Structure formats: structure tokens, C-alpha cells
Image (cartoon, rainbow, N blue to C red; front, top):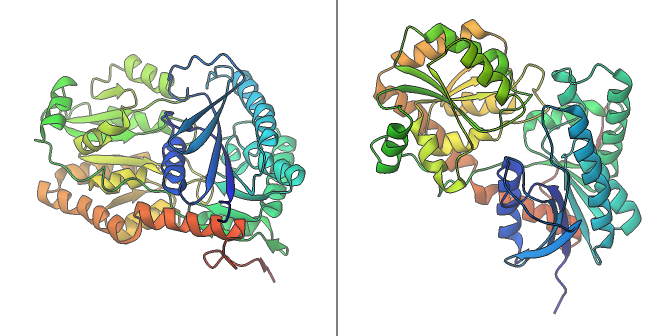
Length: 430
């Protein structure tokens, strides 16, 4: 009997962490555990304040057939650059040690988290372990950090970009989550060979999240508990992070204080949550509410409590990152108000599906007009708009479609199949 190929995933966040990448990678490895011998190297859970009590630097356990190596890291204050650097540095060193201790790895799978260093772990591992490397890029850095001027040190950006170009070039396959990101990758290698790459969309479990009416008992209870009955709810559900312009977008809510039936509901945690909460409190914005991340099993209810979902990105993020929350919104069959650049992956999905409207980032007056427009639509027309997204998802973006593409890539890179038919071939620009 042939030995299963061993894939070691070095992915920072993993079950039971609430980060989007944790949920995606937990589902992916769970679905692939019968095809491969899988080890996951990840931090102890703590993305959204989850408690963990590990005392050892490395703790081993199992999730079904998946070996999980947990790394103990310092707690991180996402509002502190020093704290972030301490956390990222600790993760980088300990993840490399954990990876080097793993025996018989055929393929190292890393993601672009932490920025640049996630890919570098795979580059180092491939060199020292003589394994193959798949680099899954969810966010291009330093391009993402540049878009929000995280630092003005151009030397840091230049070095970081050179390192990540090395990561991409040295990888056996680069995975990207959007067609616009493929264009960014190609743009990094003008007049040079573009690394072999494959576009695989993120996903949600379309069987777990389905369209539901607001009179469903769990949704009705949720609305009553939070004083949201008979409200038109504009919801943002996900990471309240640096790359979404939320500190400016929340100011839009001031334009609706004379419309008490419209409520802005932010569900999640992240680096800017304290700041936007403070803004709402300082301006006595009674039409703005905040809730923590909801349990994964409750998402099908909380997502369906909205009338319209905000799916947003900061200006300059086109081709750099894809907000994965779009897949849950489409699965729930809810209309989308996208604040996104033209030509970006999610703008394309909204346009092709007809599931909502899109406004350019920083066009705050346009956002106000879009909310007023959606609010005045006939409820049935609004419902039909949202269900167009669900239909598009079922036809093009199912979980099985994406996971099967991952399986094909892993088998090809591991040497189980003769060639990688799903990838773009290495090419040279004229």
C-alpha cells in the first residue's frame, strides 16, 4: 500500500480560532484528511479573545485524523505595533522550529500570514527540508500595508516586497483567492517569469448558511434581544480591522439620525473597534450598535438578521486582498452594499450576480445615497436582489468546487498526478 503524501500546514490560525482563515483552513484540512497525512502548525487560539491555557511552547494533539501542533505565543494588542511585532516574531521563530521538527513532509503549505513571514517560513522549510512548497496568498504585502500607510518607511516596504517576491518565485505553486490578485502577481514580475499560480476562491458552507426569513424563531429572538425589531439593519459582520476604512465609514451613520428605523450593526472584533465605538459614543449615535463575533453555528441566523450587508475595502486594496465575508452574505441571500474599487474581485461578483450595488471607496456621499436607495426598494425587490447572490454562489462558488481545486493542486505538487492542469503556466512578459 502506498504511503499517503504528508502535507504540513503552517497557518497561524486554526480551530477553534474565529478568524476567517481559521474556519477556511479547518474545513479544508478536514475534507482532505483522508487523502493526505496532515499536520497543522498553528498558534494557540486567541484571535478574538478565546481563552487558552497551554503552558508548553509546543503542544501536540489531534483533531480527528489531523495532527495539530500548537505554539504558545505572547498575547497581542492589535492597537500596538510593538505588541504585534513581538507576537509575529515569536510565531515566526517557533513555527520554523516546529516545521523543522516534522519528519517526512512532502509538501509545506503556508499562507500569507503573518505578512511576508508566512511565506518565508515555507521558503526556509523548502530549502532545509527539501520539501515542496505551496504558498497561499490571501493578502499581498507590503502592498496592503502601503495602501493604509501602516508605516512610511519606504526601505521596509522595499525589503518586504523583495522577500515576498522570493517567496512566490521559490514556491512550487502560488495560490490566490481572486482574479485581480493574479494580475497583481503578474505585475510584480514585469519582463520576468511569473511564478506558476492558481486562483481558488474562498468559500462558506452553503449548506450551513441558507436564506432565512426574519420571523424564524432564532432570528426573531436575536432581534428582540438587541432591540432591533422593525429596523432596517445595515450590517457589517467580520474583522473590524485596518484595511476597511471603517473609521470614516461609520461617520455615514450620522446622516441617518433622523431616520430612526435605520440601524448600523457591527459584529466582530479588530484593531479599530475601540476607535469606532468611541466615535459612536462621543456623537451619541443611537443608531449604531456593536456585538462581538457570533458563534460559527449562529452565523446562519445573525447574517440573515440584516437587510443589507456592507462588504468594504480601503482604497488601494484592489488586487491585494479579497474580503471573504462576501461568500457568507451571498449564501444567506442578502443584498450587498459594496464599497469597493471597480475591477476588484468582489465588485465583479456583485456585478455578475446582480446581488447589490457598489460605490467607490471614500465616496461617502455615494454610500449615503446607496443606503437610501436600498431602503426605498420594495421588500420583495430587495429580497430578489439578495437571492440572486445565492443563485450565483450555488452555480459558481460552492465549497466543493474550491476544495476540489485545492485537492488537485496538492496532489499535483506532491507528485500524485503528472501535471497541474488547474494552474496558470509559468510565463514571460514581452
